[in-house]
View 1 (cartoon, helix red, strand yellow):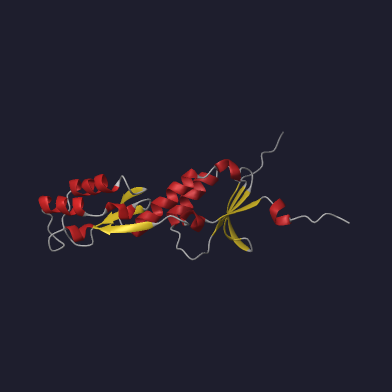
View 2: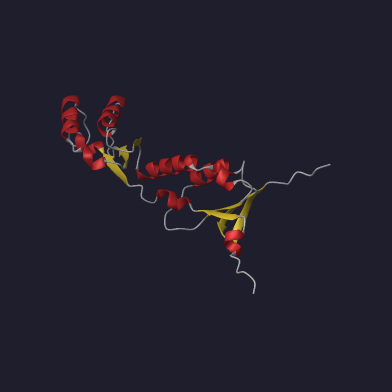
Length: 172
């Protein structure tokens, strides 16, 4: 009787699901409009007071994106003050909306990947999922994986688009 061989496990194919990089990474957006007079006017004394009274512990271990949804003119120092208050709690303080934070998380997680895991393997960057993965994430993953992967593909195992194939060097 022959041994049962798991062909999927034995194959060189590794699927990378960029959506999974977001798992467990909580994101919150803080709109500083609420710290402005009538949502538009930044008065330094009142602004500093709002910041000092705000419960910054709400952002413990989250990726905090900071934005202003009104047309207020917000000086650079006002954003700096938010960073001063939020930094002891948040994983990161990011200027922009939730999508900007998602993109930053993906980029940092991709850069944390150990490329050697993918050396000489066929790598499939999963293409479908519940979360919209931005093109920037695929671009960054390609940049990180191209030097080590034998083949790079996009899509699903049953239907993929070849993106990169390292040619084997011939010995003369």
